[in-house]
Length: 394
Image 1 (cartoon, rainbow, N blue to C red):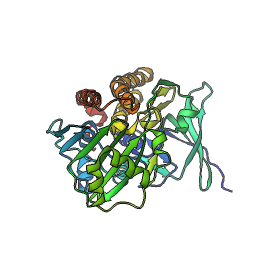
Image 2: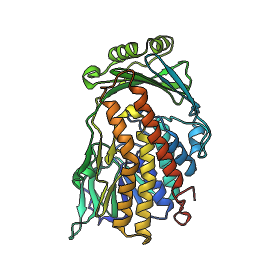
Image 3: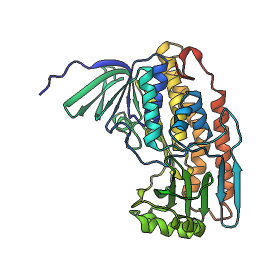
């Protein structure tokens, strides 16, 4: 049995090394903070994802100097988005704006390692195979570290701030009893898989009453094809259910899939109503799905994870350098996150309720698009803060 040394103290310990956690680590390390990231999984492992990045997410990767690596990994440029309804089709070109002339949908086996490698290059430390079991508090009740276990036994670290980036079942959120401040009611289940040799033309979103399906071009010449409906209709998923939903929503897509090379099986997410948790307290903060989750019908989760990584990193860096008081900096993070999230959250929750008709869905999607545009404008207005070197590689 190994002896347990005194916990090492870091400026920030982040629980979760996926997109939100790795991006936060990258930005904080570039700001000069001592950052440790722990994750129970493996470096580069896959995870449930629809992959699609919207313009704000692509713009942030460009700002951070990482978009070239995404492109170099063979991620195809997406230059059109097509919406298909019961009787109409709308094709929207991706026009150059905010330094972005295309969208991208990298596999998580591509995006996550790019973020992790960049964070390591900036000085962050990563520890995989660590299961966090609790947070520590000082004598005044402030969170000041974490405890857990790895393959060798118990582990513990101290930190000025603990960040939960550990997803919808966040152990950090549970340990600090982060309250849910906004609760959604709509929820869809979705199955997806990867097809090779599928004729494709950018992002495709197909909506019919009671279901939605679509195509997202991703790495290795493959397309992520998804089918979503109510949790009761999707059930445990499987190829038979997947094809039934696709045929009902889009016979034309079903024919295209028959001419392509499909997977042996599909992955299924059973559905969960959206929420916004309070994202900070004394010594702790939440980012990504740990703090904010909305139905995948919006395909906006990864974009918001990168957005909130930028917002939280700015807040912690400001508090760490004394530029702002902690309560002011993290309070601004909370307020900005909610201001940008609520329009997206509200319309996504409505769409996820699946109570719309074929005639109504275009109007809901227009509201979603307007909310995304407002989000992009807000991200573009963020100060570059050159003293904190958050905007690009060191």
